[in-house]
Each structure stands twice: as C-alpha cells, then as structure tokens.
Image 1 (cartoon, protein in one colour):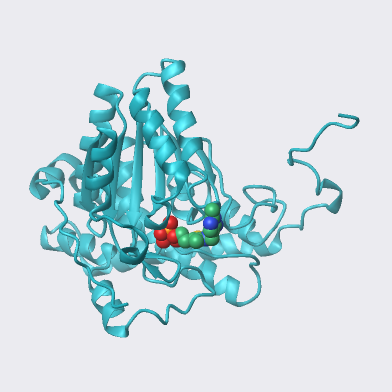
Image 2 (cartoon, helix red, strand yellow):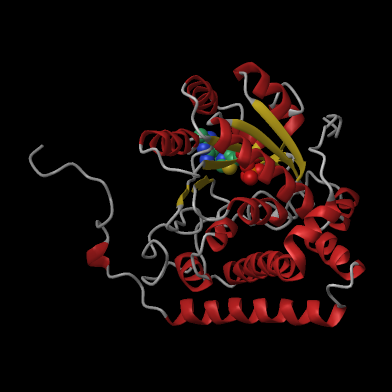
Length: 344
Ligand SMILES: Cc1ncc(C[n+]2csc(CCOP(=O)(O)OP(=O)(O)O)c2C)c(N)n1
C-alpha cells in the first residue's frame, strides 16, 4: 500500500518572533546545543553498536530532537516524564549524563541502570523510564499524574511520550478515559513519526489526525505541532502545559515528525524511498533552528561548527568512559529485580 500523507493537520498557531524575543540568544543557543548533543550521541552510539560495543537494541531519536527539546524548554525538568524505548534524548534532557547513558548501552556497571537495562531502559530523577512495552508505559504516566493530584503537588504535570504505533493499544485508551474522568494533569504526547516499525501509520490507525480525533472521544483538548520545528513545539508545549496546570485536565498532543533512521539499528528501512528520506532530511530540525538563528544574526557558521564539535567531544569522552568501565559483577545479577520473598 502506498503511503499517503493525507491527514490535514491544524497546527497550533504561534508567533516565532515573539518566542525569539522571549528566549533571547543564549537560551536559543542552549536549545540548539541540546539538539546537537542528542544528535552526536545517537550518531556515535550507533557506531559503537556497529563496532560490537553495544548489545541488544538501539532506537535512534535522530530527526525528532525538536519535540523533546521544545518540551523541556517550555515545561522544565520539574515534572514526571515517561517515554518509550526511544529514550536516550529525554534522559539527556532530564540530566542523566552522557557518560552514564553510554555506559548503560555498553552494559557496564557505571551505567545508568548498572549495565542491566540497556538502551531501552534509561532513567533520571524525573524520568520514570525508558519502557519497552508499546503502550505499556502510558498507565504508569497516568499513575504519576494521579500522584501529583493526590499529593497536591503545585505546578507539576505528567508528560507521557508515545509513538503513533501505541495509540491503538487498549492501555492507552483506558488511561485517557481515567485521566479525563478523574481530571488528571497528564500531557499525552504522540510523536507521530509516520511509522510503527515498518507499518505506515495509515495502515495502523483508523482516523487521522490522531490527537484531534481521539481527544474528542474523551472530551479533552488536543494540540498538534510541527514536530520538526523547535518553535512550533516550544509554543505548543508551553500553551498545553499551562492549560493542564490551570485546569488539571489531561490533553492529547500530536507532534508530527519523521525519523531519519529505520525503526531500530537492525532495520534498513527498505520500505521507504530515497526520495522520501531526502525530503525529510531537508527539514532537519537542527538545520531549521540553525538557519533561523543565522538569519537573525545570533549565530554564524563557525560558531555552529564549534558547538557541534564540543558536543561531539563530550560524546567521544563518554564512549571512552564506557569502554574503560568494568562489567557488572555477576554476583549482582539478581539485584534490582522484583522477586517473591523466599517461602512466599
Ligand atoms: C505490546 C508490544 N507489542 C509489540 C512490540 C514490538 N514493537 C516494538 S516497537 C514497535 C513499534 C512501535 O511504533 P511506534 O509506537 O510508532 O513508535 P516508534 O518506534 O515509531 O517511536 C513494536 C510493534 C512491543 N514492544 N510491545
């Protein structure tokens, strides 16, 4: 079946000039730097995988950087965050270090989960995971939203990132229903990167646009952003976050994006034409932000290259750290795993 980009999206309107004024040069460069750290991390993490240093799975966030960078820029770290196996970027944004994430990919004891979780299970103080069961983390994020309400935590919300492939899972709909019924401060964010593994979204989800249609069923607000454009994401997340804090009602967000890679490192994405990929990469979120900053006289080519190089060096140092770190002690294999108590 030929893939069609037929959905008519109504993007949340925003004023780019206002955001540029609001954030100013330093904050905008900070966001670009974060995107470059993520990009460099993914490029080198993949190459470590290809060298046999990393085992298990590897799901790259390349191409989707504007979404989570825009989100954390708009809402800050003081919230609960939950995401899928495509989790390196969010962990970096929520202050897990490149060293601990890389060491986790390498399976070393200095890793974020002691080397026992791997690429799909990264955590941070406010990140409840990196979780690999499609849709399975959505009830966890809903529970986090319930805890915020129960504990009367001020100015906190629960952010739940999921893929377009997850939105037709039962657990997602049970969560949306409960969150709407109980007025839970949860932002459900569908990162629509057009594919669930090799299945085009049109073959898996009966209605599009996703957020607009599904939100109606639960009587909640929806927001749709251009997930390749930092400004669209920042403006949309800011508005949606304030709405949730004000009303304690959940919202459903759709960030329309494209991934640059196959589903995971073992997927050559042969279902995608070269032409399609080429067009996608012309809207590289890093280049889009870079170009705006250059156009505004806030950045020049040389400074961009310098920032990129610093981020590359951070990641190369993380690879060295991981490589030189010890393997987990086999005696700790059963630690950190839920198991029934003896005799029960
Ligand atoms: C319950 C469940 N079913 C199937 C899988 C296998 N699986 C892993 S990722 C994936 C595709 C999910 O696609 P999407 O939600 O669009 O996220 P993306 O990978 O595009 O970020 C599938 C089917 C799984 N992990 N969990």
